[in-house]
Length: 183
Image (cartoon, rainbow, N blue to C red):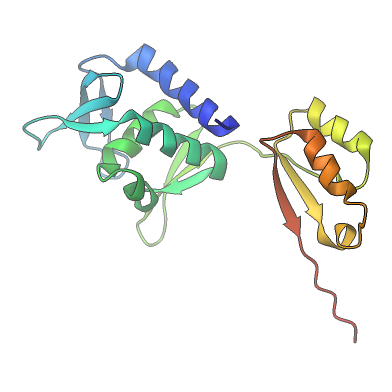
């Protein structure tokens, strides 16, 4: 289980401990319709809307997956949430309620609803060269590393790979690709 799934599970547990009781009402993000939590089990959250006769169930695994995607990408839309669960309006409403302290809801020009996390993501760069740089990234809990293709393409010793291995699993790297045109 990677870092983002762990954060998602912790956020879900904290929310359900505090608010996951029968009768808790939250609003959908687009039309602000009330949804009411009827029951929370080990696997599902049962939710009723104003129009539903019986509760719809949202798998908790889908909720955690949607939260993990939001933590990783930092942005998601209602359309993307439909791929995770067809009951996306209630799923987005739950996410909004869980992440109210760090999540911002906006509507795009095309009327799509976007959920964005506030804050910064630090991406460390220059790690492909020095061993000391790896130590700094580890000390600061870095998860993202930017590598420059121009520096690593001729590295016959594969030192950049060793530096990434020293950081351990769970580190994501981005490759910066420069195209030089000589005239």
